[in-house]
Amino acid sequence: MATMQIKNPLFILQCHHIIDIGSLLIKNSVPGKALNPVVPASTNPSKEEREMMRSVIRGIGSYAPPQVVKNDDLARLFTTSDEWIRTRTGIEERHFAEQGTTCSDLALKASQKALEDAQLQPSDLDFIIFATLSPDHHFPGTGCYLQAKLGAKNIGCLDVRNQCTG
Image 1 (cartoon, rainbow, N blue to C red):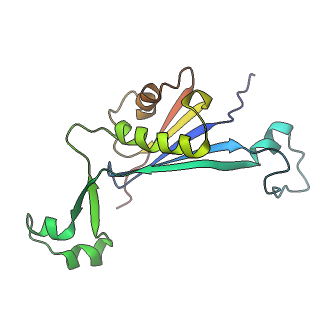
Image 2: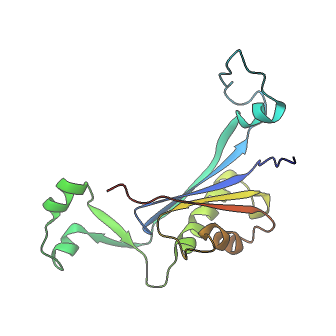
Image 3: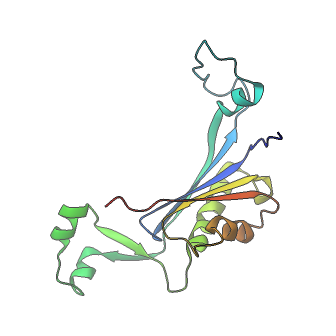
């Protein structure tokens, strides 16, 4: 069975629907430069497993749309108050995306910042993992849209769909 070694995956982690997008670039570190992993004495990890245990976060990026909506703004539209929202949710403000902006549009901006922070190009990526609860479409996954927007060709994409727990 053939295996694929992934060295530069891009993780897109989305929080609060489509209002905040964060990206992490994970890269295998140079052996000896990372923290030594704790390996149980009963195991004999392969070279590939040892390299993955030395993975580090290479870059981070985030993006939130510029339009800020505060609780008082909502209180002018609905029967609520800043105090009521804050005590029940802890939220004081949120960022709204313009009409027509998709989750992959927001992820693109966060991903570009993460790539810059990691000093990598989209061509350096070899996998995209996209976690969201508000995808662009149900199929194909939003990671595929991000891949196209980044211009990262011939790499795998995986969406992780998580919903609110209540």
